[in-house]
Length: 226
Image (cartoon, rainbow, N blue to C red; front, side):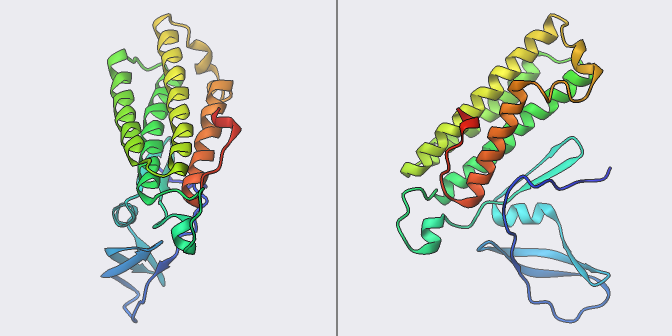
């Protein structure tokens, strides 16, 4: 299956690597620096290019890796808030701990919504218990984000994250009821029917806004999350 990397986070990935001359094809353990985070990872050199395992990048940066359909979504948090980076006290700067928790929560919400949408569109059987499992994990992630929200900007951003959780929860309950009443046939006629519904579009728009905010390290309000 071909993996596509969508632009889900407006993040510039800067990897500082000093590579000595190695063979055309080889594996070396290297020290990797990504957005201020550092760690060791195996680097494969093939055809004059260097390749690093996505899971290694997630481990080094404490980011998140998830799948949505045929997309592999890699979200890497910044190493520090924009206020810390500039050496100034920015009231809109997000703390590093909240950004990390926010990135993980968005990944959990996606892991809840994507399998449910896939099941509904393909007529797969679903149960309330199955859906509850995804909701419980996302609820735990939301609680962790709440604890990490120590700065004023964090708390403002948490309100958007909390709204997104409730958007997904309401949408999930709606689909579960439709499935129980056997009223989901319309979603099987076209792969875009469910995606194009207002509730789905709102969830997608809010998630993108939050991802952009977390990657920038600065609180940015967005109407799609209200």
